[in-house]
Length: 236
Image (tube, rainbow, N blue to C red; front, side):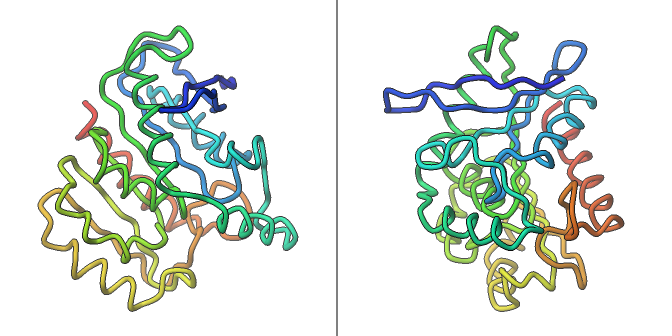
């Protein structure tokens, strides 16, 4: 169902890779799947494949392509977790938003010979959740979903620019996004007409991962069902 494709970087003479999963019929819309700090690993590819089975063209860009192309890491292995943290420290999220915009343009122009798709959403996890928020504020993406996005509390000054729907999933026991940050996110976004926030009591960062020890099955299924309904509403 999936294949690797190349996308033209914006403002750079470069191509970057992405995993693309294609539905069996014409795509009803497209969804960009923005990875955590662990690269386009098996779990991210599985998320793309599930979206393709639901009728979406799903594309997961390699967000670390500038300095660690093709990396795939397992957060349940301590050495690989620490490697991922080092990449996070090198990463420029402003470049990440440009890459998302490049994927949007590629999809709307007909990525890898596919029919152009105009309705494009995104869903991101961890660092990808932050990028989903940034994409909602800085691009014309049709709808965005973020799971346990990091550092959003430090970017609330951009919320005025969110013009299309955004949903954020917030686990209350997130050890990377503490209670003060969560409170700031609620204070800054609860009244925003384009933003929907959901809290997940007692769940931790990574609860909606497809694979591994961090997954909470009940919480993941609840959040994913909300995301599915959100995309059905806003990408139709």
